[in-house]
Length: 520
Ligand code: V55
Ligand code: FE
Image (tube, rainbow, N blue to C red; front, side, top):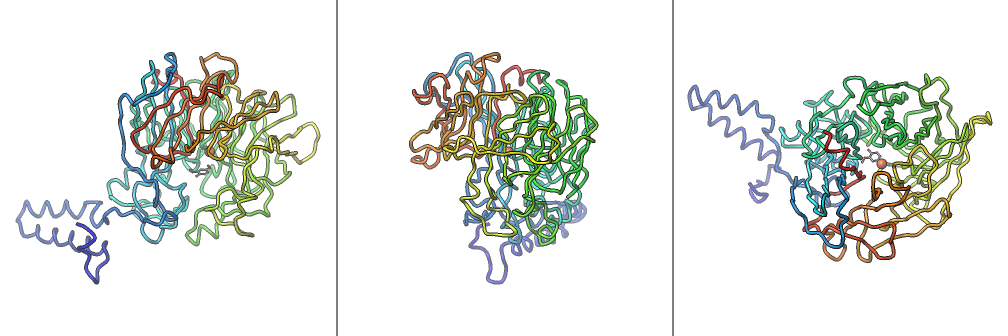
């Protein structure tokens, strides 16, 4: 049925509802068989579902860039010199709205789209592409109902009554391989586990064998490169709007080995964190969970410039009672580049702005300010031996503005030299040792966040490649997968994959060596 059928006194949904009822009524006249069919029809969860029609206004939910097509492309078209010994997978995930929202929630924010996972499997210079949605409770319920059932971002009061109590997670933010699983994250819910090669959802709510002590799980867990441990946390851990933060580690096999719950000064967005060899460092931002906004049908968080941001430090392996919260220059930081501790002195590098970096969350006290939202790399330091309760934070590499900081992940928890930042459509390469920076960019192509790929699993820090997607502006946003050899940045991309279309979007990506994905 097309839009033209719409009658003058019926909106599209009303029309569909009426026609479905009509079909049911007609079946009643068919005797016993007809009755059974009629019952089936009325038990159909998709009954009355509107036809899919995304808003054209790009400011509305799902209004632009929606893809929704799960894809398989064996042997993508490659160019250049793909290293023959590169064997692994580049994974990405981002929100890809499964259904348009009902009119009431059309103003929902982009962070609320369902998680669509994509994978470039790279081996012997060949590249295969595959994408699948994370088929969790939310995706399945909506697929069955053929419509959106979840209202606003992290606001269960806006949901269809039929999904009350269901896990609202979208699995749309980051993904990670550990103990043979591809874990896909949204920070309001437990991970979704997928098969790392087929992208089949194997566990829609992965709780580490029932041992996860938190109702939520960050999108940015870390791996201790010395032990292979998984280090992680969840905020709003003991229920919606709770101040509880659960911090835990799991061993190489996914067994939880340490789990403590601490209390934050208030409930606010804690998007990323840092692990050092001896400490866990949390960062509470003044993107505050806001009960009033939630009651009004808003999107969970409201930026409150008058609340202090806190750096929270606790000892790894302790009972959590040593947690100490520090204040300092109020910076809205979202991603950690790297960090380490030397005795009691802790250093953490994060990108962030002086103000709100997410304009689609309302601000309580002032209009959104793009200048204050601009991201710089900030170095936070605190010495637990000082006995003070404040951190220092200074801007480093002020010549670089950017977001989505990364590093050579084999150096997380440790002093590190190389860092990377998505800098205005290019990739900033930062050398902390030399104090120098440069930006790699491709004319006419806008680069997404990148991942560092070690040249070989035991190559020295920073010896390897950057991998990430480029959107070719002159070709309607068609996607290129770009491989940059860090040993020869001046030569431009060492290799690329020319995708025949615009790939599904991303928030973050993850590189997994073959050894991490074939064990599954
Ligand atoms: C972020 C992204 C999210 C989210 C909270 O990049 C923070 C930050 C894609 O969803 O829910
Ligand atoms: Fe993130």
